[in-house]
Image 1 (spheres, helix red, strand yellow):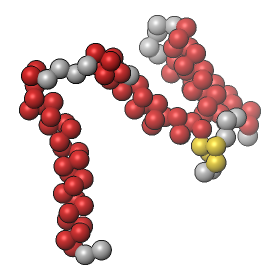
Image 2 (spheres, helix red, strand yellow):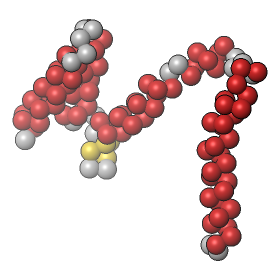
Image 3 (cartoon, helix red, strand yellow):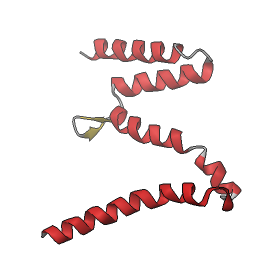
Image 4 (tube, one colour):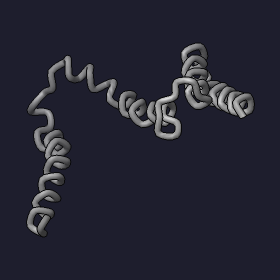
Length: 106
């Protein structure tokens, strides 16, 4: 790969990153997003968080392991969050289950 190709790739990646973000600033209120897309965008932060957290809870030693301590702690944290409005209780429950399962598992 020569220098020109590399700089062209950098430029295209920069445009692909900048243009979608800048469009909201440049267009402002002149263009309205469809209601369906607005509803779908409400789930973007949760989807991004799940995309970061889920692989860490499911993959152990480069293989998918559905019976591991991290997944058990995550399930306990989600269940506690659904059951309680306390912001600290899911953290405490998830960590307790994680540490307990690690002690049982070795």
